Length: 247
Image 1 (cartoon, rainbow, N blue to C red):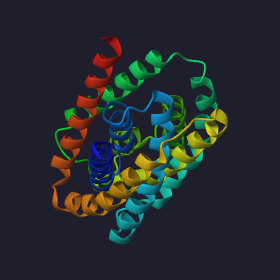
Image 2: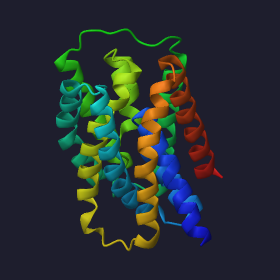
Image 3: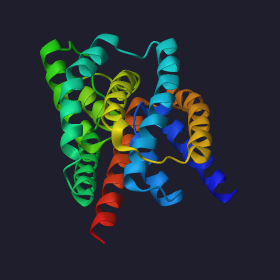
Image 4: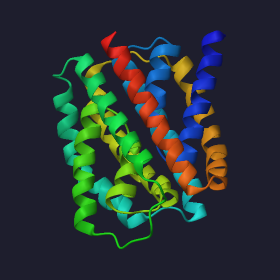
């Protein structure tokens, strides 16, 4: 019963994060599955991809209805990142787990700092298709290597590189999350991992419900505050994962 309650709690936090920020599902789900539910790293990564795909689809519908999805930019990001994500996913299988954890921590912390250093919400701007495709390819490679959905990198990329407002970046990043997660999951299909569905299913159900509430909460928070919140979350997760890998 305790494990079930922890699964529900973890899922709710993942859903709220994805719904409000359009990102952060994997960086919350993976630690929750490992430290709360006792999953191994490989099992946690695979399970988190399944959870994030379902939850992101739910959150994307909510953002699309609210008109906060930039479909052109999102599709460019997603399409450009597919092949790099697949190649990097295969490469990651040859890298020790501690190296992947440290790389994850560094990337998350760096992205968080970059978001926190922006003192104001970005202005609207014309988005270059070439820049969007280039950023998407790099994003796909990094997220495929780390085995996460990629929203925690997609949001800073959309905001900082392409000057997309944080409110639109949150919804748009869900397209990237879904694509990268599906590619990464496909690369792990032949690993033969044993997944505990008695915990994954309630975790996913709580995440889906949380995503709807997260979208409503995110709509009430000023863009600058949402940006600082997301940056702080990334920095905290990066520090925690880095310390945990070294200790």
